[in-house]
Image (cartoon, rainbow, N blue to C red; front, top):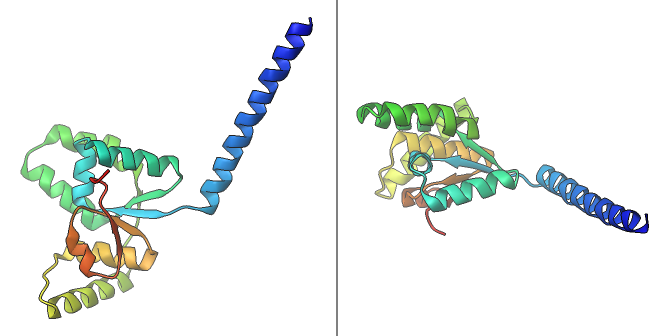
Length: 166
């Protein structure tokens, strides 16, 4: 009988410790969430199961961070898959990858900011594509970090992380 009581108390303590760890994680998640906007190359890396991109994605989701995607990125990914006639990858993208993200819509101010970014970059001799400029404007408004291997974003006043790097 004494053995049962001691082992029962030990199990109870372990359960309490697990519950406290989980509670700390929940509180930590609610107090510290970051937004990450993935660009098309990061989404492609995730679809191709690039090990470092996958590791970062899982870590950010586990940390409670929000991964987001916007329509211009969706468009670029789709057009690439359609061009390659990659129907299996398209299904994988729609069923497995998209559910990881929340959708973030562009607002009128984002279009204006993208135009400002384009003009500023052009004056400095840089040429950026419209989808990248729209993504950067969205990140600027949301104070989010762009996930991309594309260093062109470094010419703009936004944060960028390259998840290909370990």
